[in-house]
Amino acid sequence: MGLIDKVIKTVNIWLPDEQQENYEKGKQFEQYVANLFNHNYYTIKDWTRDNSDKRQGIYVESDRQPDFIIRFKSSNELFAVECKWRNNPYYSEKLDGLVVNWSSFDKINRYKKFEKEEGIPVFVVIGLGGEPLEPGKMFCLPLSEAKYPEMYLSVLYKYERPPKKPFFWRNGVLK
View 1 (cartoon, helix red, strand yellow):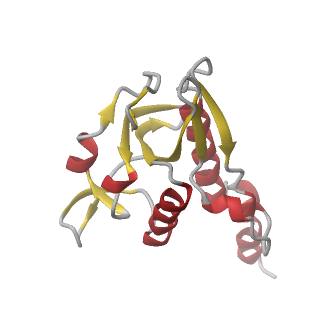
View 2 (cartoon, helix red, strand yellow):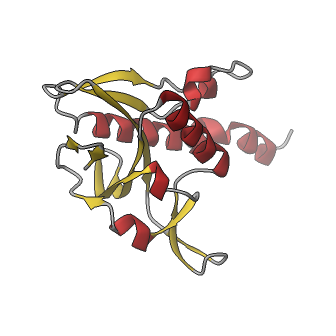
């Protein structure tokens, strides 16, 4: 085995695995979002653990749910939140515009099924730019508006919110 072959075999030891790095950034963003729910008013009923990604061949059913199920304490209402952080938008030739890819059709359909079966609304919180623990921009939209894996920025900007502002639940709407 030559030097080049040895370097190629060990490169993943020195360089972070992109998938692992993306997973870590996603978890950091989830933590950031969780901290925007004032614990005097909200409780996190469930927080998906994403164990399926960590253990090859083991399927964990709850990993297919949105990241959080949150209870608004004063009314006992439940809602779910799926968190996604993206570094930046990109140009989609197919859509001929700048878009953010937040999911896949399979996942969107799972979230829709969850929303229907559980009878609780699902919201998508997207952080864009900056860092996962300090996003440059943030958007919070109902799942019904996040119909496609790639979303135009014009759609997202309708649901922009200040990234550091605590979340507010009122009349079935998360802002």
